[in-house]
Image (cartoon, rainbow, N blue to C red; front, side, top):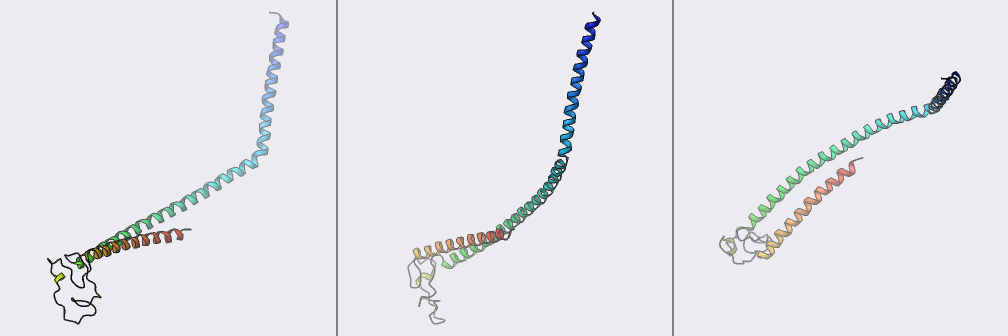
Length: 178
């Protein structure tokens, strides 16, 4: 091969190597200069990330505590509601037992026919409605329709009262939360 051609190849290769080195050096220096200008911002961002992680941990713990407090209140309220339902059921059973086998309630304000508020003490005579097998209407006894209506209305009122008590306690607990 011609020595002149080899020399040109060396020169072209050297020029390519030099231009590649200069380009790499330029981009390296530019990156270095860019990092020098961004260094305060990078440190500030790192600090903000740390602060945000701390705030997130605190708020997550607060949310977990509030959730646990509400769950505890809900459990307590459900136990109270169950107790109230048992009380209402016991009172309903007592009311039904007072109605007697005919399923009718006595009017305590009715005069005559025993036990009324205006009758003379000790004058309780056996009325036809007092016997278990007697279905006849007697004075001082509410009709079967009226007794049924009163029992249904009493149960509805009790159910509404229980629901109100439960919702009211729930509302107070929610309002108490920060």
